[in-house]
Length: 69
Image (cartoon, rainbow, N blue to C red; front, side, top):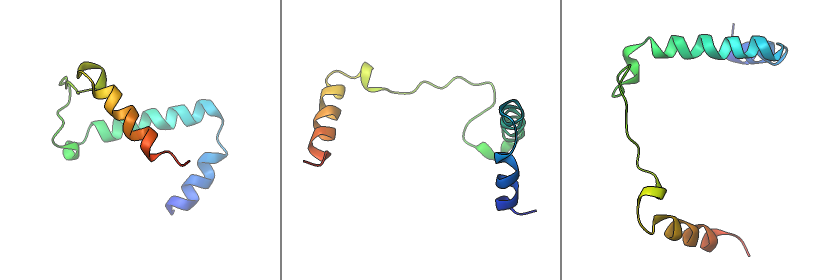
């Protein structure tokens, strides 16, 4: 079965079954060692603009400059 065929079938599923499928796929991926460098059960701290002084203002300036006129 091709991915296109699977996707067509998934679109026909009720929402509850789609959520079960999501959960199943997440467990399948989580159980594999292929997601290196992340390790199962570890906590990872991510930097966000809210913790860097002035970062949000700088990001807003860049977004405003990139916005079409």
